Image 1 (tube, helix red, strand yellow):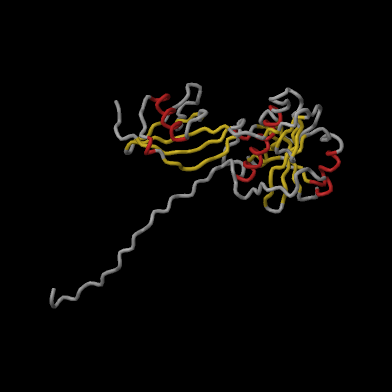
Image 2 (spheres, one colour):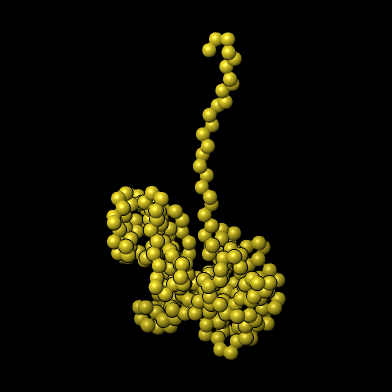
Length: 272
């Protein structure tokens, strides 16, 4: 309008949506899994080599301190005499490197009369607020690989004994040479939504008030998206549009050998 000073127009800046980072608790990118050697070398053990006792029953050594659970790591200097005595028959498993330290699992599944400092507990029962994410990644890697070694002691082809090779990364048949590697069984978990509503389920044995997104294993010959549609239909009789299925994140779940893949899906028509 003439005679009226026009107000200064500020440029309209579109704010881009930044989703919150997804933290997968049982995996930590800080844990470098690349090996320097394919076999354990005693001469390389030093104070920065950390050993973690574990077994194929899904447990590893932890100790409670200051209301928090901590893995019971044994440093290299302390471990050296144990490697030639109590741990002589233990299977050594490379776990990874982080913060200047090398972590090695000591699989004591088949070792008798061994003394462990601390308690042998299952990592999945330790709440996320009492151990660090790095420790959780190391512990679950240890129990997952120890479970693999326990369940793969005999060849699936000829029935002969197998032995650990590649620093605990595989087992090889002593007769036919067949190689077997740790496997992960893919499972999907999905949050199904319809507007402001979401679909949750629960098991009868769960504590009161516990609910969860729907989850299930992926079948042979099935895509991840098809598994989402099928599992939701099987468990709730609700039809999910396949085109609405969107990948969110993934997380190892080695209890004993699953791999959890997270999705979001939508229902356009809410059936009542």
